[in-house]
Image (tube, rainbow, N blue to C red; front, top):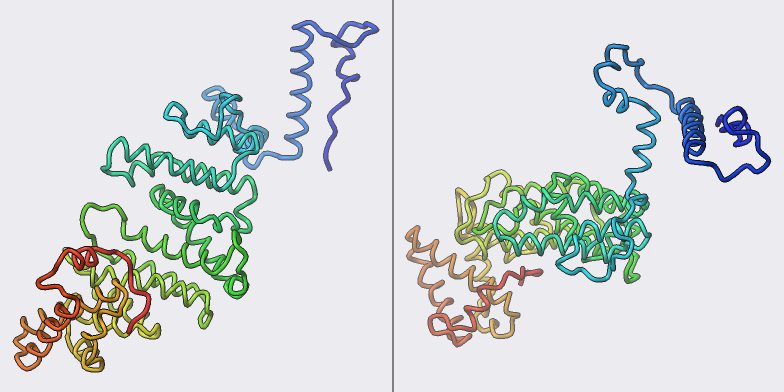
Length: 409
């Protein structure tokens, strides 16, 4: 039951002079009235939010007023209200939120938009993009660490929660915000928030399967969120290729939390698996060898996904026991593969050529004299078919592509 604050008339008795007109009050009377109202309000609030722990002792009160204040239920309640970003007061009410000039502090612009009810997912994405751009302009080194120190992701997260948008996750349908907020959450040690979002979307997979409305949650949202999370576990932006163990483990975790035999989740897993397969083979040069257990588990996840070319190529890149058998079988079943190269998309050409090159290298290393010449002839035929010579500029540009193959032959 809420205890009502005494009416103003009762507070004035004995406090204000008995005059016919109630207001205005002088400064002293106004201060007394404010103190009386505040005292009454705090007493009533304390009744509604009683102390959770014993009252501090007299010695404790004498030693630290601040300590007592932090334990007061009234202060805790008020602090929770006033710390809500929706109640934040802009430092400059006249700031133009549509203009992010270098003179504007992006945090001030963000807080102003939130306090005025003008913040949107698009502006939140712009806020994070501005922070990252400023950090890159300062220095390209340790960007992820400095992103974490910025607190930008937490700022956006608090707004999403205070405005109630985190409840239905519709904000994830904004691809720009999704792409930016996941790296900030990881940089700030808040990655479990992103995993919780993924778990919620996975639980709604059947619902998402039939949603195709633009700007709303759909199957692509789940796939993009899963890819963003897995990418962050490989620390993107590193100056040199790094170990993929973190991404392998993240894919295994994601695969374990999504429902089986669902088109939406299967497509999401396939997309992330194909991207990692590319990084593990075509883009494996200079990359440290992964954990055997994580690599083999990754390969097992891909076996039901119908990627024969990827699986054959992955066998050539096993961290401890690479084999060429699957690659040779793949090429023998497709004897016209060299002639078909000119009809393939550039990325598929790149994958096939890399498979042939890796198989030839493996055969030469192991002294497989019977099969090595046959693979060498396939390589020469591919070069001739694509008019390469050794490797011309056109194929050089193709080999530098980072776009993964989505389908095997």
